[in-house]
Image (cartoon, rainbow, N blue to C red; front, side, top):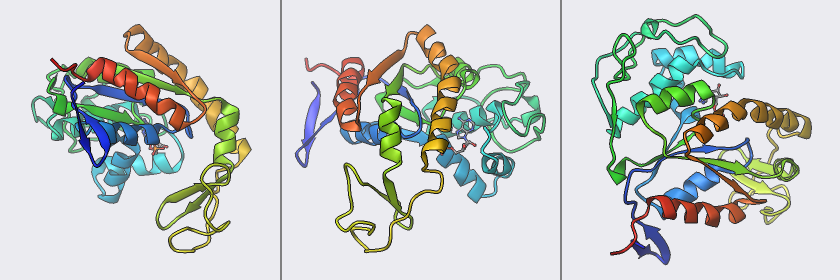
Length: 281
Ligand code: AMP
């Protein structure tokens, strides 16, 4: 293996571009797995669609202004906006190359998927698609163009649009029994100012109900209750089926199952290494 050590932790070099999506219900630990992958494989970076959207909302870009009310309503942002956002980001990082011709949203023929249907207006987001939506983008195969997408694609249509521009070469489906996810999230406490998260069962604060560093009182997220979570998990189950089917058909779907992130990570690392890390010569 092409590995070296930084402060006792082994790190590996990627031999070819890894273009990864993590698929799993809320609470399954996708963020944790993404962070662990990036620590172990420093050439990897993550792009979170939720973070990108929130940045656009904060910066009051035309796309952010449109997305804000949709996000506040808990609906999905239209596929056409999402694909533009993600491709624009991939291109700004030079992981895909293509024309920089700005595109008006009205040139996209795609039907929106959620609230805001039919409201497409011109904005300044460029994706490299030409006015007829013809592909003009090229994904880099350089290992440094390796990425993990978090939160995107969320629908089969987003997946198909992404694949038509940038071939995803590993879709990781993370499975944990629903009873365990419910147990985990319903025992969760947060320190809102820092984002530190505790759990009564496996990561309790030193003093019950208090943040370890500041001593502030911990709170529960308003939506961390079993009914809300059962609904969210069921919704994920319904919407993820066509997405998983898309990647199964493309022969890039790999499923991993475990009761905790610690059980899942070694399996994920081994699969990642098998696919993307160079064997030493
Ligand atoms: P997240 O941080 O991933 O929970 O995303 C926050 C919100 O952003 C979601 O509730 C959606 O409104 C929107 N969003 C994020 N990713 C997507 C996506 N792939 N497709 C549509 N809407 C999205």
